[in-house]
Image 1 (tube, rainbow, N blue to C red):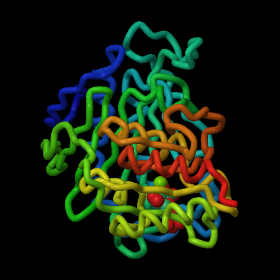
Image 2: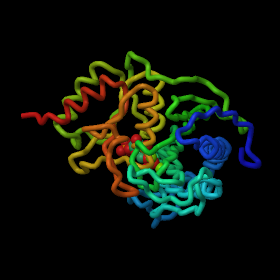
Image 3: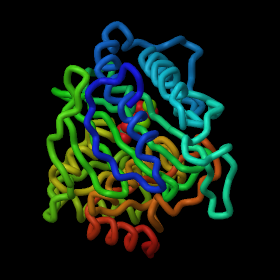
Image 4: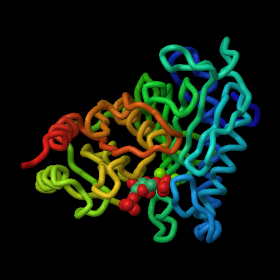
Length: 321
Ligand SMILES: O=P(O)(O)OC[C@H]1O[C@](O)(COP(=O)(O)O)[C@@H](O)[C@@H]1O
Ligand SMILES: [Mg+2]
Ligand SMILES: [Mg+2]
């Protein structure tokens, strides 16, 4: 455990012997989450009139601040060779090896590399700062240089700042939910699985901007499930993990690539939902199989119970007459 680490007892089984690096990354998240939560007070305004992140969105003061905290701490870890964030134009090279027999973050034939790369969305749903609604912090740990495919994730998770602070952590071994308090991570639910009977749905974007195919699918789902949409993917997906259902930020007529970012949002959430027994899709295939072409590239995101995602793919890939 990193010096100064809190008592986080995480039994992680991670591919390729990366347990210790992933443990240290998670430890930083567990320690930093309460600070992020506490530091939101007084940082709910816009960072600067001119300030936009690389996706062209206005940055809140808290977006920039949370990114700096996470960058300082994660990039200092032995075994982390890259830090990337939704709030930064370029990947930060941390100049560290993986801690295994790795020598650099070179790329192997299969697209995997030697060093571990950490991608974060420091505050997911930060527009909810204004209305004081839930938000999250997302992280993905890749065994390849970023941008990387989702199948290169060895672990991913998120913190949900709700009435209490919780963390969901996924490795190839499964998904665990923790409650974070006083620097500790207490297990709430082991082997988190999506409930077999889906209950809730949440779809982003304006209805007139949806494709005719997605609108038809949405009409069906509306009659089967209960609407839960709060404007922060993390909080909405957390409901899907708790109650079963589907979350989507679909391809839009005005923006076929959707809104959410593959490296920081789509891949980690796809990995978590798939490890919890559900499915992820970009409309045609698993998000984890999507090619990674750019650091800040966007993707349509559909995650949830397998049957609902199968139906979604069927609906959006068959054009209506
Ligand atoms: O305001 P909209 O269009 O409903 O978009 C909400 C979506 O945008 C996001 O807030 C984007 O995340 P960021 O706050 O990290 O930019 C998602 O969390 C959420 O699903
Ligand atoms: Mg986000
Ligand atoms: Mg964000």
